[in-house]
Image (cartoon, rainbow, N blue to C red; front, side, top):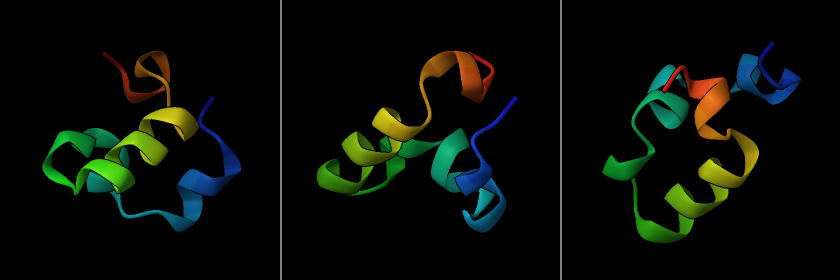
Length: 39
């Protein structure tokens, strides 16, 4: 089950956080652990 925040977040933000700037990517990884991203 994804975090409710995922509803308001573009899919790429939690499917490909490595393509975002480091600070954003780290924040996204904190909100969406790998198990929530389907990894």
